Amino acid sequence: MRQKRAKSYKKQMNVYHYTFKFREPYQIIVDDEIVTTCQKSSYDINKGLTRTIQAENKPMITQCCIQALYNAKNQDAINLAKTFERRRCNHREAIAPADCIQSVVDINGENRHRYVVATQDLDLRRKLRQVPGVPLVYMNRSVMVMEPLSDASAKYSEEWENKKLTGGLNDLKAGKIVEKSEEDGGEEGDGEDGAPAKKKRKGPPKGPNPLSVKKKKKGEPATGGSKEDGEKKNKRRRKHKKSGEKQGNGEEECENSGNDGEDRDDRHNENEERKVDAKEIMETPSTRENSVDNQHITDDEE
Image (cartoon, rainbow, N blue to C red; front, side, top):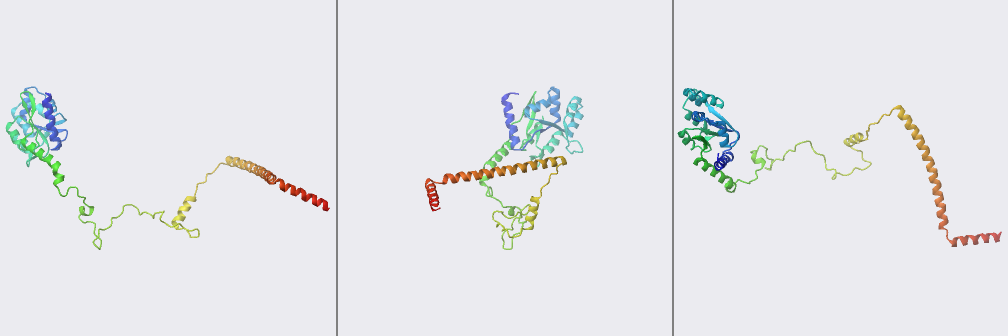
């Protein structure tokens, strides 16, 4: 396939994908004529469909088209058709393949099931061009070709794009915030004064804000909840020690208590020495002379 034709097919499938909501794998309905044509020219129809659509696909055939192949008694074409998925057309008696495919694809003027149609019937293709969103594939000699976008499909696509661009600007309700009470249609009853009812909070009730609550005085008894919380906090698990560990801990405690007593005596002696030194430093020469004169006076009196 040439690059230019492949690009145009890709653009067409993007239009069907975004405008008409086609999704992979694309469902392709084939008729008896295209199966016979591919079998006669030894053309691989599966690879041809994948190359044309450029995406994953799923070929399908109706029961009426299979019956037409049985009537033609072309066993090779029948074997090829049996490899495709069977599409139920709900026709108790076989009808013309073109009428069968049209009834499956054209449902009230739209391609509701989003089928791609591969057919050699020119009349059927002419009828399906009137239905928007129907990709048409056919064989031109030994080349598989996709028809360009039909007028109905192009018109629908253009309207769709314009609606997306200008729909929000022209719509009066676009961008309006709708309250939940309006959406529910007044299921939640209004109050007595006509005011909207308060919304119920989900989850357990919340306690008061601890920053806005007055602090309790020491004399006031604590509430039951605070007592329970205090008891829970005060409860601690006691670790049970083994007998050998208990004895070792007792000896260590005795040694530590003896060492603590010696340290206290040493500290007491050091403090007294510091006090004495401080007194000697604080005594000035004048106080010393006065003390000496007082001693001489007392000696003379004696």
